[in-house]
Image (cartoon, rainbow, N blue to C red; front, side, top):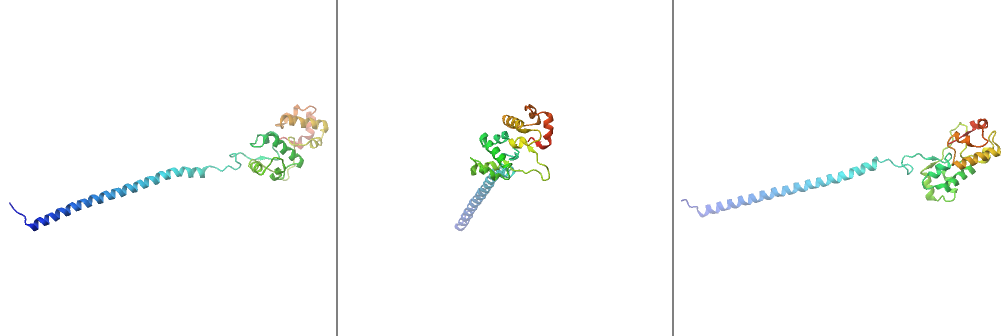
Length: 209
């Protein structure tokens, strides 16, 4: 049986120790790299989930149309042609405010700017800001003869129409107020004293809007 010398034993012992140390270092390095990879993957996964949550919110923010007047895409109501019923139907106005708007419009013979609404009792800065989102002031087309809107005409204006006079003017005025505004020419047929012949006399001078 071959015996190892002390030097050989020492050499083999050192080699065995180095092998064990090398294996340990190799296992440690593999474990470390795996840990770093898992950390990186976890970070990517977290970023991915964050991005998925944020993208729809951003998309919604940009794709959602801005509300021009606070009521979606509804067109603004022309202050100079709106009926009492139309004004009353607007959010935050009510019948009393609508009547005050109609009265001021008759006094001024039409609004020139929305700022004139501030003259009405109850129209605060906050209320005016609200009205601006739903109302507008549109002037008649240039060169086009302006017809008298029967829904906003005063008693004097109605009386001045050909073939009308005080009695018929009052009948038209009262019928309009009772209905909350005329919706069509057919509504005029119910007015006592307003015959088709009389209506033809001023038909070209009036309109119903």
